[in-house]
Length: 443
Image 1: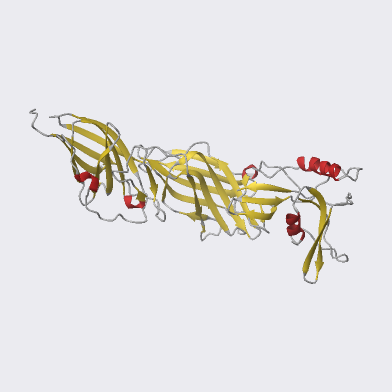
Image 2: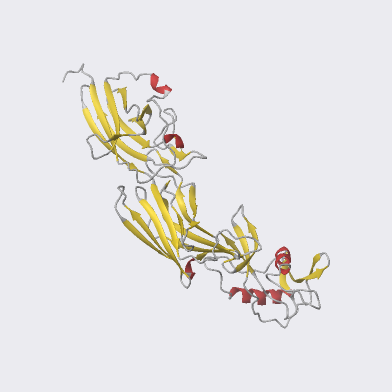
């Protein structure tokens, strides 16, 4: 070949795109264009790069890619070109100097849903995120390294792969008639992708889907057909079922990751004695290989989700909820026995109460310790008839141990014409005072 003949590099971007996972929005038509920074020609640009973007298919050449970006980095790690393709014009070209280049190809139905770097911003560590308020759509990626020499013609094929999974459907069967809502959540999921195809460790996100009761009255179902970034490690799956009395949640730690390039469906059956038995199927759907994941939910998997102050959650009365920090305070299901000391010293009484609380079984999945309720917390539950009753003659509730700061107290509420009056004292401890501890949880 003569040295004055320009070399051509033709890159066929063959993309495995399926219509089995429906999208909410169709892509906007957009003419092929270049980043403004591309107008400056490189010195010594003796090689021409011709690019044709296509999606894979059975017919020769496949279908044209709906929306594509190709970032071209030189050997020094600088993005020297940004090319854009779409269905209207699926070809792009760039003149480049001889040398080694890395090409990162990003494709999808509608890339306007994502925050993509410009040519001047782009690095191999640039982060691609979903724009706020946009619904996640498909996202594909590929990388190729090429060496261009004067007078050389090089052909390079790149196959893009999905960097997201598709949640096709979620179904829970045999749900009792008393259930008023069912939700399923997955966490943690990655929330972005780097230019090099890896996923940043932080931040992560969760995905929650509300199911709808079906005509048979016992099946709850949703078909989101939603694209999601894969899970970070082995995810936690939670199933929450709500009644008028509160929410019961079940939690399961999956034994393997939910990887990109797969369709995912979750089917479960509620069993009154054992909880929820769930079977998750990662079906190929033309993307990746078939996989089956089985989830077993029983009483050992009980978890707390969306507790509401003044209601019961997993059988425990919820005293307070801090929604901002996702923390709650639960009251023990009943008063517990303790060995009253012969001493009247508050320190001896505290020791006796702490010994009794240490032996009380904790709620499933909770690692914190039982403790005495504060004055404020005791005020709340002694004035709620779900927890205590008022003596017909005395007009008083039972007496409970409490803490006023670090000082041991005993307290009760008294019914008066305007509501309740709260009383507490730090002397004259007696065996008849009830010990009903509380415990702090996160959800």
